[in-house]
Image (cartoon, rainbow, N blue to C red; front, side, top):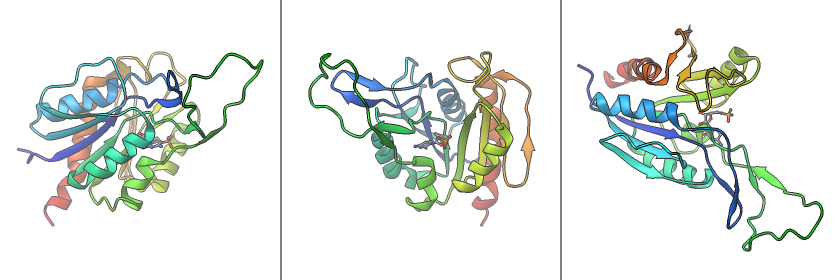
Length: 219
Ligand code: C5P
Protein backbone atom coordinates (compact mmCIF):
# COMPACT_ATOMS: atom_id res chain seq x y z
CA UNK A 1 0.00 0.00 0.00
CA UNK A 2 1.28 3.44 -0.96
CA UNK A 3 0.71 5.96 1.85
CA UNK A 4 -1.49 8.85 0.65
CA UNK A 5 0.51 11.92 -0.25
CA UNK A 6 -0.30 15.49 -1.23
CA UNK A 7 0.34 16.02 -4.92
CA UNK A 8 0.29 19.44 -6.53
CA UNK A 9 -0.29 19.46 -10.29
CA UNK A 10 -0.25 22.39 -12.71
CA UNK A 11 -2.10 21.91 -15.98
CA UNK A 12 -3.46 23.61 -19.07
CA UNK A 13 -2.37 26.74 -20.88
CA UNK A 14 -2.07 30.22 -19.44
CA UNK A 15 -3.69 33.36 -20.82
CA UNK A 16 -1.67 36.55 -20.96
CA UNK A 17 -3.96 39.55 -21.34
CA UNK A 18 -3.30 42.13 -24.06
CA UNK A 19 -6.42 44.21 -23.37
CA UNK A 20 -9.79 43.49 -21.68
CA UNK A 21 -10.91 41.09 -24.47
CA UNK A 22 -7.70 39.69 -25.98
CA UNK A 23 -4.96 37.41 -24.77
CA UNK A 24 -1.96 35.29 -25.81
CA UNK A 25 -2.24 31.56 -25.23
CA UNK A 26 -1.13 28.19 -26.67
CA UNK A 27 -2.50 24.85 -27.86
CA UNK A 28 -2.41 23.04 -24.51
CA UNK A 29 -5.67 21.19 -23.75
CA UNK A 30 -4.75 20.27 -20.18
CA UNK A 31 -5.34 16.56 -20.92
CA UNK A 32 -1.99 15.30 -19.60
CA UNK A 33 -2.20 17.19 -16.30
CA UNK A 34 -5.86 16.27 -15.74
CA UNK A 35 -5.08 12.60 -16.46
CA UNK A 36 -2.37 12.67 -13.78
CA UNK A 37 -4.74 14.42 -11.37
CA UNK A 38 -7.41 11.75 -11.95
CA UNK A 39 -4.96 8.86 -11.47
CA UNK A 40 -3.59 10.40 -8.29
CA UNK A 41 -7.06 11.05 -6.84
CA UNK A 42 -8.19 7.52 -7.79
CA UNK A 43 -5.23 6.18 -5.82
CA UNK A 44 -6.35 8.07 -2.74
CA UNK A 45 -3.82 10.90 -2.81
CA UNK A 46 -4.81 14.45 -1.96
CA UNK A 47 -4.59 16.39 -5.21
CA UNK A 48 -4.26 20.15 -5.64
CA UNK A 49 -4.89 20.95 -9.31
CA UNK A 50 -3.84 24.44 -10.34
CA UNK A 51 -5.10 24.90 -13.85
CA UNK A 52 -5.34 27.42 -16.64
CA UNK A 53 -8.58 27.52 -18.66
CA UNK A 54 -9.54 24.18 -20.29
CA UNK A 55 -12.71 22.48 -21.54
CA UNK A 56 -12.16 19.45 -19.33
CA UNK A 57 -14.19 18.23 -16.39
CA UNK A 58 -12.35 18.53 -13.11
CA UNK A 59 -11.75 15.00 -11.75
CA UNK A 60 -13.69 14.07 -8.62
CA UNK A 61 -12.09 14.58 -5.21
CA UNK A 62 -9.55 17.09 -6.45
CA UNK A 63 -8.94 20.52 -4.90
CA UNK A 64 -9.29 22.70 -7.97
CA UNK A 65 -7.65 26.12 -8.18
CA UNK A 66 -8.47 27.89 -11.45
CA UNK A 67 -6.05 30.53 -12.71
CA UNK A 68 -5.58 32.46 -15.94
CA UNK A 69 -2.21 34.18 -16.21
CA UNK A 70 1.28 32.88 -15.45
CA UNK A 71 1.50 35.35 -12.57
CA UNK A 72 -1.71 33.93 -11.06
CA UNK A 73 -0.38 30.39 -11.47
CA UNK A 74 2.92 31.47 -9.88
CA UNK A 75 1.10 32.98 -6.87
CA UNK A 76 -1.11 29.89 -6.44
CA UNK A 77 1.89 27.52 -6.62
CA UNK A 78 3.85 29.63 -4.15
CA UNK A 79 0.91 29.43 -1.74
CA UNK A 80 0.07 25.72 -2.09
CA UNK A 81 3.41 24.02 -2.75
CA UNK A 82 4.40 24.13 0.92
CA UNK A 83 1.81 21.41 1.58
CA UNK A 84 2.99 19.09 -1.24
CA UNK A 85 5.09 15.92 -1.14
CA UNK A 86 5.17 15.76 -4.93
CA UNK A 87 4.78 18.60 -7.44
CA UNK A 88 4.15 17.86 -11.12
CA UNK A 89 4.26 20.82 -13.49
CA UNK A 90 2.36 19.77 -16.60
CA UNK A 91 1.08 23.25 -17.49
CA UNK A 92 2.13 24.85 -20.75
CA UNK A 93 3.04 28.16 -19.26
CA UNK A 94 3.54 31.15 -21.56
CA UNK A 95 7.19 32.16 -21.88
CA UNK A 96 6.33 35.81 -22.53
CA UNK A 97 3.58 38.19 -21.48
CA UNK A 98 2.67 41.67 -22.78
CA UNK A 99 4.79 44.34 -21.10
CA UNK A 100 1.64 46.41 -20.56
CA UNK A 101 -2.02 45.43 -20.47
CA UNK A 102 -4.17 48.07 -22.19
CA UNK A 103 -7.01 49.15 -19.90
CA UNK A 104 -9.26 49.76 -22.91
CA UNK A 105 -9.85 47.56 -25.94
CA UNK A 106 -7.13 48.43 -28.46
CA UNK A 107 -8.66 50.30 -31.41
CA UNK A 108 -8.13 49.32 -35.03
CA UNK A 109 -6.61 52.72 -36.02
CA UNK A 110 -2.95 52.21 -36.86
CA UNK A 111 -1.80 50.12 -39.87
CA UNK A 112 0.70 48.26 -37.72
CA UNK A 113 1.09 47.98 -33.99
CA UNK A 114 3.92 46.46 -31.97
CA UNK A 115 3.35 44.27 -28.98
CA UNK A 116 6.21 44.37 -26.51
CA UNK A 117 6.64 41.13 -24.54
CA UNK A 118 8.56 40.46 -21.35
CA UNK A 119 9.48 37.13 -19.79
CA UNK A 120 6.98 35.46 -17.49
CA UNK A 121 8.10 34.33 -14.02
CA UNK A 122 9.52 30.78 -14.12
CA UNK A 123 7.30 28.78 -11.78
CA UNK A 124 9.13 25.45 -12.06
CA UNK A 125 12.52 27.12 -11.66
CA UNK A 126 11.27 28.93 -8.54
CA UNK A 127 9.92 25.86 -6.72
CA UNK A 128 13.18 24.84 -5.06
CA UNK A 129 15.19 27.97 -5.65
CA UNK A 130 12.69 30.57 -4.34
CA UNK A 131 9.78 28.82 -2.61
CA UNK A 132 12.06 26.51 -0.58
CA UNK A 133 10.17 23.42 -1.76
CA UNK A 134 11.88 20.19 -0.71
CA UNK A 135 9.59 17.49 -2.11
CA UNK A 136 9.81 15.62 -5.39
CA UNK A 137 9.81 18.02 -8.34
CA UNK A 138 8.73 16.90 -11.79
CA UNK A 139 8.77 19.14 -14.86
CA UNK A 140 7.69 18.65 -18.45
CA UNK A 141 9.71 19.47 -21.53
CA UNK A 142 7.81 20.07 -24.74
CA UNK A 143 10.41 20.22 -27.46
CA UNK A 144 10.51 20.20 -31.25
CA UNK A 145 14.20 19.21 -31.51
CA UNK A 146 17.04 17.62 -29.47
CA UNK A 147 14.54 16.17 -27.02
CA UNK A 148 16.91 14.27 -24.74
CA UNK A 149 19.60 16.93 -24.61
CA UNK A 150 17.15 19.74 -23.86
CA UNK A 151 15.39 17.63 -21.22
CA UNK A 152 18.68 16.83 -19.45
CA UNK A 153 19.64 20.45 -19.44
CA UNK A 154 16.22 21.41 -17.99
CA UNK A 155 16.51 18.75 -15.29
CA UNK A 156 19.69 20.40 -14.00
CA UNK A 157 18.78 24.04 -14.55
CA UNK A 158 15.41 23.83 -12.79
CA UNK A 159 16.51 21.48 -10.00
CA UNK A 160 14.01 18.76 -11.00
CA UNK A 161 14.05 15.13 -9.88
CA UNK A 162 12.41 14.00 -13.10
CA UNK A 163 11.66 15.48 -16.51
CA UNK A 164 8.86 14.12 -18.66
CA UNK A 165 9.83 15.00 -22.22
CA UNK A 166 7.70 14.84 -25.33
CA UNK A 167 8.14 15.84 -28.95
CA UNK A 168 5.52 18.44 -29.83
CA UNK A 169 6.47 18.58 -33.52
CA UNK A 170 4.55 15.32 -34.08
CA UNK A 171 0.85 15.52 -34.92
CA UNK A 172 -0.07 12.15 -33.38
CA UNK A 173 1.14 12.92 -29.85
CA UNK A 174 1.59 15.86 -27.49
CA UNK A 175 -0.59 18.98 -27.62
CA UNK A 176 -4.34 18.41 -27.70
CA UNK A 177 -4.19 14.68 -28.49
CA UNK A 178 -5.20 11.72 -26.32
CA UNK A 179 -1.97 9.84 -27.01
CA UNK A 180 1.54 10.65 -25.94
CA UNK A 181 5.02 9.22 -26.21
CA UNK A 182 7.28 10.30 -23.41
CA UNK A 183 10.83 10.07 -22.25
CA UNK A 184 11.42 9.97 -18.49
CA UNK A 185 14.76 11.43 -17.47
CA UNK A 186 16.16 11.59 -13.95
CA UNK A 187 19.74 12.10 -12.83
CA UNK A 188 20.09 8.31 -12.55
CA UNK A 189 18.04 6.86 -15.37
CA UNK A 190 16.24 7.30 -18.67
CA UNK A 191 13.13 5.35 -19.63
CA UNK A 192 11.16 5.25 -22.86
CA UNK A 193 7.70 3.77 -22.27
CA UNK A 194 5.89 2.85 -25.51
CA UNK A 195 3.37 5.28 -27.03
CA UNK A 196 0.11 5.07 -25.06
CA UNK A 197 -2.93 7.03 -23.93
CA UNK A 198 -2.31 9.96 -21.63
CA UNK A 199 -4.41 8.22 -18.97
CA UNK A 200 -2.14 5.15 -19.14
CA UNK A 201 1.03 7.26 -19.12
CA UNK A 202 -0.26 9.21 -16.14
CA UNK A 203 -0.04 5.98 -14.11
CA UNK A 204 3.57 5.47 -15.18
CA UNK A 205 4.48 9.08 -14.33
CA UNK A 206 2.81 8.72 -10.95
CA UNK A 207 4.63 5.45 -10.23
CA UNK A 208 7.95 7.22 -10.83
CA UNK A 209 6.88 10.16 -8.67
CA UNK A 210 5.85 7.97 -5.75
CA UNK A 211 9.03 5.90 -6.07
CA UNK A 212 11.15 9.06 -5.98
CA UNK A 213 9.24 10.26 -2.90
CA UNK A 214 9.45 6.96 -1.02
CA UNK A 215 13.07 7.02 0.24
CA UNK A 216 12.53 10.54 1.64
CA UNK A 217 9.56 9.36 3.66
CA UNK A 218 11.71 6.82 5.45
CA UNK A 219 14.20 9.45 6.70
O1 C5P B 1 11.50 25.99 -19.89
P1 C5P B 1 10.22 25.37 -20.30
O2 C5P B 1 9.07 26.34 -20.39
O3 C5P B 1 10.31 24.55 -21.55
O4 C5P B 1 9.88 24.33 -19.12
C1 C5P B 1 8.78 23.51 -19.18
C2 C5P B 1 8.40 23.12 -17.81
O5 C5P B 1 8.45 24.24 -16.95
C3 C5P B 1 6.97 22.61 -17.68
O6 C5P B 1 6.95 21.67 -16.64
C4 C5P B 1 6.19 23.87 -17.32
O7 C5P B 1 5.01 23.58 -16.61
C5 C5P B 1 7.18 24.62 -16.47
N1 C5P B 1 7.15 26.06 -16.57
C6 C5P B 1 6.80 26.81 -15.46
N2 C5P B 1 6.82 28.18 -15.52
C7 C5P B 1 7.17 28.80 -16.65
C8 C5P B 1 7.53 28.06 -17.78
C9 C5P B 1 7.52 26.69 -17.70
O8 C5P B 1 6.46 26.22 -14.44
N3 C5P B 1 7.15 30.13 -16.69
